[in-house]
Image 1 (tube, rainbow, N blue to C red):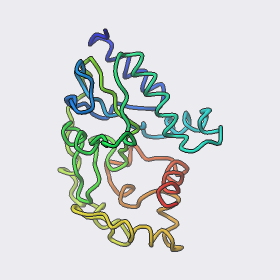
Image 2 (image 1 turned 30 degrees about the vertical axis):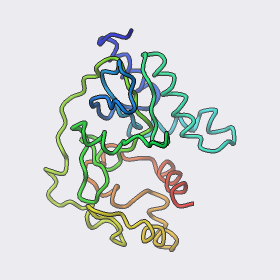
Image 3 (image 1 turned 120 degrees about the vertical axis):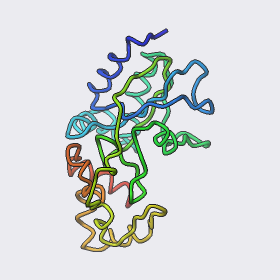
Image 4 (image 1 turned 180 degrees about the horizontal axis):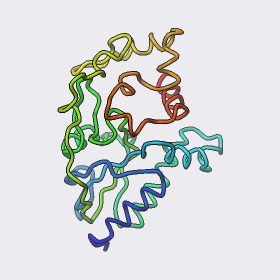
Length: 219
């Protein structure tokens, strides 16, 4: 049975794969084994570490669908086995794991003025590759909502077609804009609102990574 002193080893193993523990919350009994002590939300590191590992992987080059999801399943599944836990993914279901609710319950992510989750360190660039339900505690530093200290809130006005709001995301309007020539900037560099977030600056994605995810979203 893993003990709490293995937490640093888990964080190090995540980092070696270009991943990071974004937040931890209480286990959800609807999805986590009874012996779970923590539910840890996992996402990509900022910069190029995550993307370099994914694009060098066998999954990326084998020609099969969903290479990033399959890479995530292999890496997080392996870590779950190593540390005696269970890997959970947004695509599991039905029932679908409530990642949004878990994120809000963690105290390290909040709903932003444009509706998307915002993270204390990663801003609006935050995303999840999965979660680990673990039989050990993962102590993470306390976090503060970056929106509380953001005076200008540029995310609110950054979307060229005002598709984002605290209460709704107008997906058809977003897709219609991406179909037009002026939507190329968002397609090639990622959502303008996410890029505008000051808290996102230190964890900006590579354009190639953003372009890939946008191509999957808009196909």
